[in-house]
Length: 281
Image 1 (cartoon, rainbow, N blue to C red):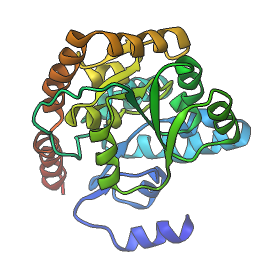
Image 2 (spheres, helix red, strand yellow):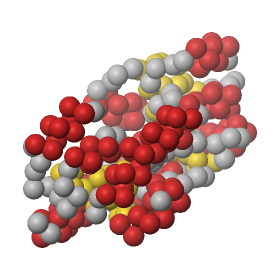
Image 3 (spheres, rainbow, N blue to C red):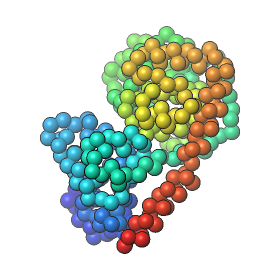
C-alpha cells in the first residue's frame, strides 16, 4: 500500500478516477482532481473487529471525507454511505453501471427442458437456496463460479443435471446467456447487479430478489422473489415454465429496461464530471 501511494502521488493526472476497490489510494491524490467510484460496501460488512475498523478508516472514512467527487452505482450504495457518513451525502452522485454486451433483437426461446443460469457462487449469491428450491424440477443448470463443498454436495444429493464454469471469457458468458432460458439471481446483497441487465439484453428471462438494488435494476423485466424463501423461488421457476404469456412479457419488458443502461448515457454522465474537475484546477 505504501509503495502504491508513493507511486500515485508522483504520477497524478489531470483527472484521477479510482474505479476499483483501492479507495485508500485517494489519500495520496489531489482531492481537486480525484473522482472515486464506490461499487458497494461488502468489504465493510464481511469483516469484524479490528479488520472492520481498519476497513472503515481506510476505505470509507478518510477517502470519502477528503474527496470532493464521489460516484456510486446505485441508490442503495448511496444510502449505505449516507447512513455511515451523513456529512458526505451531498457529494455523492449516482451513476449506474452500463451493459457491456450487445442487445440482441427480441427472440423467444422455446424449450422442453428449462435451462437455468446461475452467475456467481459467493455466499451472497444465495445458490444453496436456489438448489433447495429447484430440486426435483425438470431443469438443467449452468453455474458460473467455483463451487464450495456444500454446494457440490447439494448438487450431488439432489441429482442435478448441471455444468460448472470457472474463469470463463466474456464471450463464453454471452454464450451461456444466449443458451439459457432463465437467469436465477436471488442475491441477498449487491452493489448493482449487472448480470440482470446482461441477461435481459440477451433475451434471457430473469428471476431476482425483491431487494434494492436488484429490483431497481431489473425494472419491470423480472420476477421478484424473497431470496430467503425457497418456495417463492420455486414458484417463480414454475410460473415461467407454465405461462407462455409471462415468458413473452418478461423478454419484452427486459429489452425495454436495458435501454436505460446504455454506455452512451453513462459516458455522458462521467464526461460532465470530468469537465467539472478540469474547471476546478
